[in-house]
Image (cartoon, rainbow, N blue to C red; front, side, top):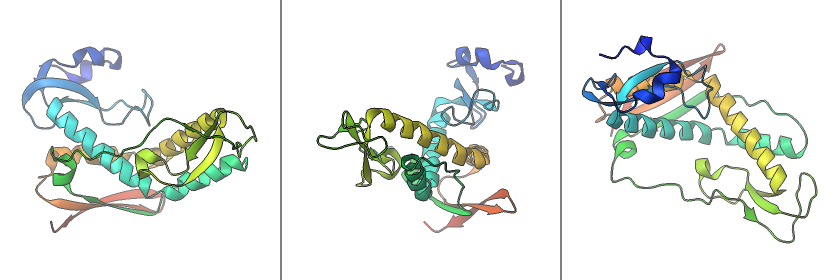
Length: 225
């Protein structure tokens, strides 16, 4: 039996595909060495909580985490707007999470193999003729930048014109803004992991994240299907 505590993070990648007991469903399967905290928001030192999980459970976790992340960020549209406006006006903006976040968890929809719906968007930069960058005034290599990120909000008309250089700068700033939001409520990832282990997915739930006295409280409430 593999010992999770005896494994260093530097050797964890070589364990993928080995036979072990899944820490979620308990079956003997080929495993993935899975970090609860995702690399896009957390660095390697922060991602020290890892588990052996099978591919089926890993797929469920990824789907549920992506859904919850997207729903959280969608409810922070004002952060995207203020971050963009602060960038253009040469100001700094420190994002804050909402005091209350409500998310409906319809597991049959989230996990359904028939649910092939994806957000369709072109993640490239649309070049625009006869325009100028509203940040620096440049009139070359002008692209359309979506204030409300399309991978989160879908296609939308909330657009400003930026040169390629300023466009890349604001994309980097937005990624940092998203990191700050998810860092503030990082316990949500451990809750999601517990959900995968303990919840029967025939029921639907409302997930509530509430800020109280500087701390975040997480609660689940069953709702009618």
